[in-house]
Length: 344
Image (cartoon, rainbow, N blue to C red):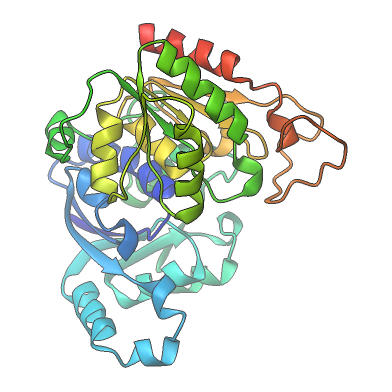
């Protein structure tokens, strides 16, 4: 059986889908997948051993000039790729109008969420078969349920999350010769409210250096690069990495002794690679989107407006740190939790 997955972004959402593929492989021997994904994440699906072909799409870029894109050779190539095979099933694992449009273009039994399970209910008109999932479950659980109900099997070992990233695949990540005793600080995220205070990162970097660890700081944009440079000023054992693609960053993370992450896709990748990972949450709820893994631990801030869900902090009282909700997640406390994980 050959199945096409429509799941275009983001990094965390793609990683959340991996355990569903692992389940399917256990329950349906011989199943294989192709995957439609945003061009910026085209490396990621190939990390799962059951994925054969990755079909890049550039919706984010094409939206900027839709008329020109519609008549471009790039668009024609994508249409040809997505329609080249007739699949046993086409699964829209995103449930948005944009993913439903892509699902409608493919050839095969089109499967997606029903009206009750969709946030964009118009998407349901693209599907020939609809399924129901509990929207209150964790993102990993929802993905496992979608594939189990679409492909008609019972989820094996529901309490065990297996991302399926093999040791062979981890070894294929290209990594330069680096220290064998290092940590990774995954400090970059989208919302202002999800950013752990800069001064806390700086203090944690000092603690790590004193404990004999080198610290690597990846970044994905100019703002994150400047933050990384600021943190790196506080110790000679702290290094700002050059700009890297996702595969190279995965290689750095996979060989780390541990990682500290905010609510970011790289945190989910770290957990999927079985690296001891401490993830820090304030405005968002780890119950729904937290890192899942055998060596992943969530630390949720304690504050009067925690889990606000706001992209911009609206807390008006004077506080020593910003965002205010992270005040109690101090560097010393975070280090204690990470050290406990590393020693296990």
